[in-house]
Length: 133
Image 1: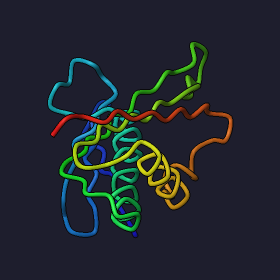
Image 2: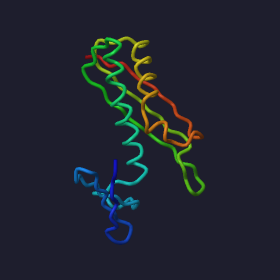
Image 3: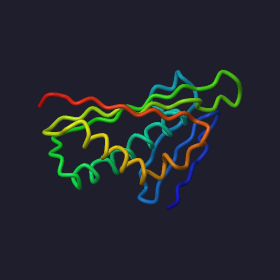
């Protein structure tokens, strides 16, 4: 696994993965066509959550029709403004039960390497909601 981050001037960067896919990055709020580094972290956590939640759900026999992961983070007020807490919320559609969805989330979290790469001082909260199909 390897990525390259190229400086594009001022505070703008382009990250390139092994396949040549590019992501524009800037910490400036006014750069609407670029992602901010904290957003990339939350996106990575959300996609990792989904990648491991779905196989765990299938293993438990859940008939998931659709799901969405929403990740929000609260940053500390003082520099370096690390995340103090992160909330992972999953909306699930399908023929599922609360106890099995909860178990699938737990199994997925056990394997999510992005989650395990975060600072252990960050408070992680997980929730889910079952939606009507």
